[in-house]
Structure formats: C-alpha cells, structure tokens
Image (cartoon, rainbow, N blue to C red; front, side):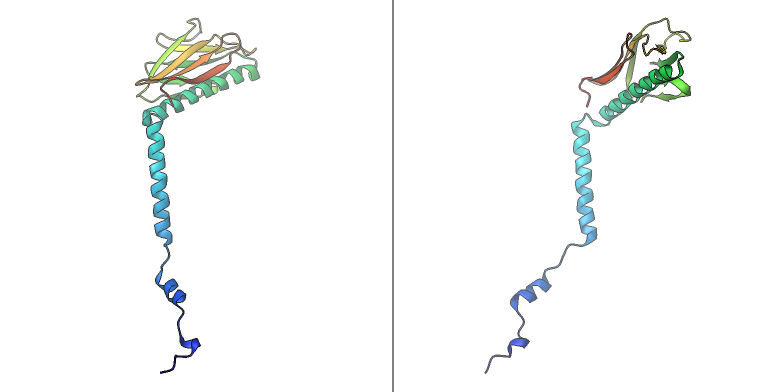
Length: 167
C-alpha cells in the first residue's frame, strides 16, 4: 500500500501542541496572591510582628506631629505646645491636631515641667518662634522593643528612631 499524500499526514509537533494546555488567568492570579500573602507574613514576622509595626508607626506619627508643631511656631511667630498624656495614651499638637496611641504601647515622657497649661501626669514640649523648644524625650515601648523621640531644647530638632528591638 502506498503512503498517504503528504498533505493528509499530521505532523507530530502539531498534535503535541494541541495536547498541551496553557495556564488560565485565574490560576495565575491565585499563585500571585499566595506569593504576596507569604511575603507579607514573612516581612511581618521578621519585623517584630504587628506590635512592632504599631510601635514604628506610632513613633513616626508622634515625631511628625512634633515637627509640625515646631514649624507652626516658626511660621506664626507664636509659641506652640505639644502635649502628651502617657496614661491616656493621647497627644495634642498645634492647630487642634490630636490623636491616640495603641493600647499595647507603654508611653513615657521626660521633659521640663514648666510648660504652661500642663496638668499633672501630662507632658508638654513648648516650641518657640525662633525654632527652639523646652526639650524632652518621649519613649514608646512594647515587649522588648523601644522607640525614642528626642526634642533638642536649643534647636528644637526632633530625632526619632528605634533604640532596641524595634523594626
């Protein structure tokens, strides 16, 4: 029997291509989502967990509000105050800005006691129109981690960062 004409034969590569199926978009998205979830969990675990993230965020927020209060004192030419209540875990900045700190954090304040309008138990840092301040230190802690915010009394410069164990 003669061989069938060439145009009727199926090439081996073509039949193999049809047998191999691709990956659906849904499967690709599922894999990408799983990789993202694993990445977030790994990063959180390496940075001290959720409490470590809260500590870092709270420290950066307080430092930011201290800088804002200093800027307002310079811009308006009037003395401005930043108040913090370690027991209630609340703070007040210039122009009525206020906020609270996570309950899991320990809050400590050291500074001058002569800031007007500060009740017992609260701490205050006054910023002067020339940029200087009454100075002080705010420490935020959780477990073995500590975040310190220092305000220079001469220049009013705000320095913030982890002291130990914080991400």
